[in-house]
Image (cartoon, rainbow, N blue to C red; front, side, top):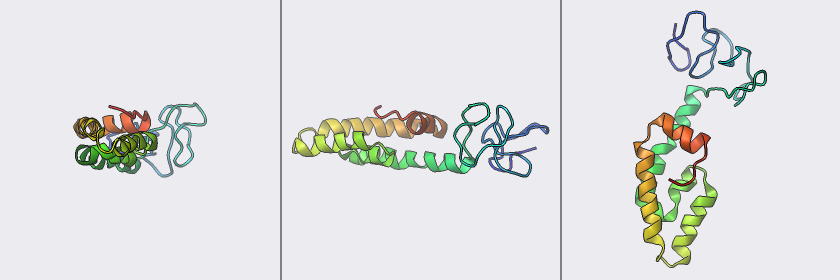
Length: 141
C-alpha cells in the first residue's frame, strides 16, 4: 500500500503515513506515534505531544525557497535579500544596513557571506534545508 498524499510505501496495517502523517485510508491526518486524529495543520499531536510530519505539499513549498535564496545569496548577498526570502528579517536588515551605512565599504564582507550562504543553501538536500533553515531557524551559515 502507498500513501495517497506523498507516495511512500506503507505497511498494509498502517494507520498513518510515517513520512507525512496522512491516513492511507479515508479521513485526515493522524499522529504517526499514537495513531489518534490530529487537527488540520497542527505541528504537534495534542494527545502524545510528538511533532507531526508535514504534508508533502507544505514541505515542497518550504523547500522551494532554497533555490531562490541560494541564487540571491550568490548574486545579491551584500543586500541580504536571501535572508528576507527565508523570513529572517533581522539578519537581512543587518546585512543591508552594513552595506548601506558604510557607503559600500562593508559590502564586500556581506557579499562574501552571501556567496558562502548561497552555496551552502544550494548544496543541501531539500530535507536538510527545511530542517536547518525552516524548522530550526539557523540564521547564519
